Image (cartoon, rainbow, N blue to C red; front, side):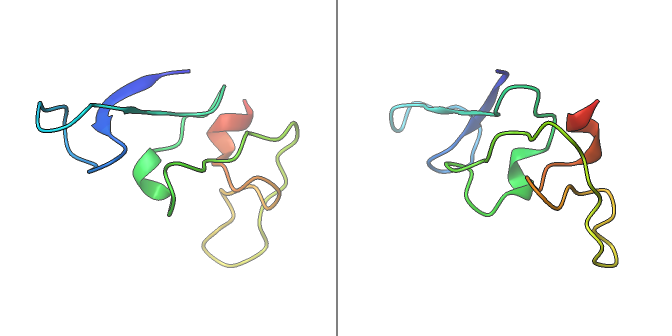
Length: 72
């Protein structure tokens, strides 16, 4: 799982004002963590992509809500 230099507590770059805890994306996830409402609860990527039918959300899986790029 990739670790980013963004803190999941304050969403700022790594600093020494508190214990740094990097955001960890689930396995195979290539989504931008800032796209999630709760970066501490990013769901796992499902096995099969099925496009959301809501207009503007066609690139998002209706089952796991990850972008289509996570399913390739």
